[in-house]
Length: 148
Image 1 (cartoon, rainbow, N blue to C red):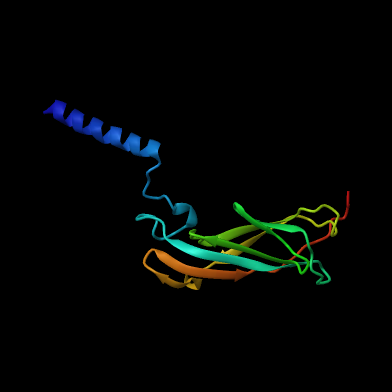
Image 2: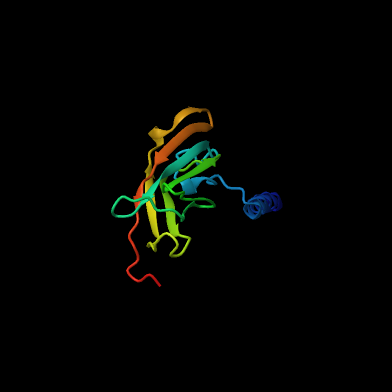
């Protein structure tokens, strides 16, 4: 009887260790703060776009705009667009703005903007597909005091 209990306990521990090594977890999408983390990860389309300007409202060209591993560079009108598919951003989304062209179009301070995302903003979802969320994020960058 004790041997059987030992074997069953050992088997459970072995399976738990194997699942941990393989990265199997019930909270695989907990980093998104999803209420569905217990059952898996929902998907959605997330579209970020906007304009980058200076204090006077002039568009700034050559600013790299990045969200995780996707990025775009502002055009002559200061416009950028970052489409993301298959990810479910939830609560807060950080977007980095970096002066990537040096002094070519002026020297500006790098900044990060945190975009608030509300679950109720997603449209057109069904089942595990939560739909589409479109955010327009306009940013004003400060010039660097020292342009070196």
